[in-house]
Length: 97
Image (cartoon, rainbow, N blue to C red):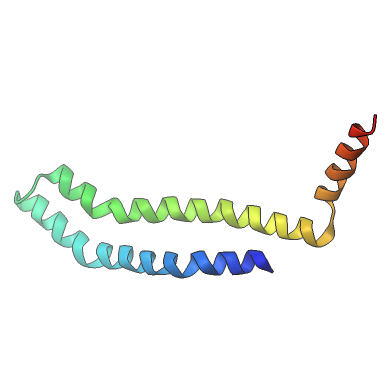
């Protein structure tokens, strides 16, 4: 349950940042690409600035997938007491020798 609260604390700011990135891709991206094509700014710089939010969103999505995997796994383990309790018993028995 606490994991879901932690996810909520990160999900709201992430949604705001994602909205800003999408707005940048829709509104500023085409303007930058046209400006680069017309020679107003360097093409490579225009392309970099136009796709930077897409790259940022891709990295965030990959990190979110890994974070959700870890959180869901820990949530299952804490609820069922499987893996964590197994290793706890194993280490405790090794300390007793």
